[in-house]
Length: 378
Image 1 (tube, rainbow, N blue to C red):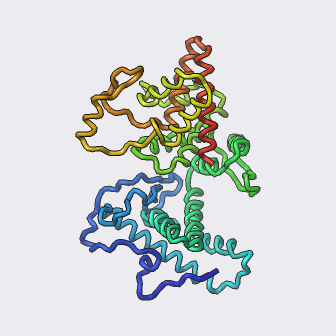
Image 2 (tube, one colour):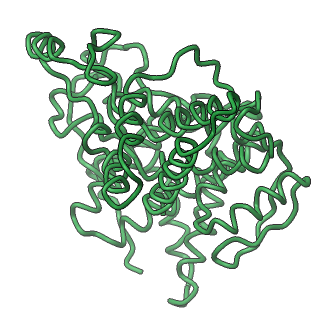
Image 3 (cartoon, rainbow, N blue to C red):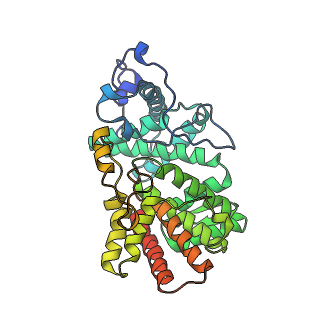
């Protein structure tokens, strides 16, 4: 493996990636604008963001100064980790077959003693460097940075509560049968689990309700945004929530699955009313697939001028062509909330003993949506 060397004339961060240069006086502190994931078991000195730098945009002059400062400080730490790893690897005489394993072992040792002192912009800077390596078609640099990122995430995961760890493991398990086996093993108190790749890992015991609620909380946080940066992760979280709920065995009317909604969301109700008006088939499946992929009614909201928004609101329609109840443009249909809506309507149908063709239709919609999300997730 070629050894990456840092030029002594450059600062460590600039040797890895070129950041926009700004006077320190312009880096005014602002309230943090990114969501953070804080593990209750052992909180790091500065919470690490779970966001990618994509929201910063391509124009450095428009970046938030506070985020730019975090990116710079995180970049310095990434460069420092790289420098220490490369120094250790220079002294190792490695055979090509064992090189990947050696890189992972070095990453474990270097990051293990630094993980609690990492800056809030460490992962953000790491993602930014991975994007640059991908643009430069530098597979070697990209692979090394991804090893560092995965090692950091593994260390943070071990400090999280058991149900958070399980959600992460489920999101990495592709086969449905393997996820079900993992959930059964977790509900039984944990133990050794063999994943899809044949690797054995030690899993903790956790409550199925806690797992479902954790996935639902993450879903609610992601779906409340105007745009969804990672629809693959969103689809995985929906699947985890639904499978954990199904394994609890409480059924549609289980009070543990109640979000506390007093009314059903307008966008999801409008879309569901269109679906139940059509016969199940390829056309209906295509409509659901488009929405789950962020098209049609599921397209992300693009900010418009106030004049355009006002003009559009005058022509808004709600259920069955009537005016919108709220008078505002409904937010996009989101996968998690859509399945929540279908389940609530189904629960009402079964509770009122009016099941029939409508219940069968809704069951078909529910199962078809899960099948599409499974294809989208993995």
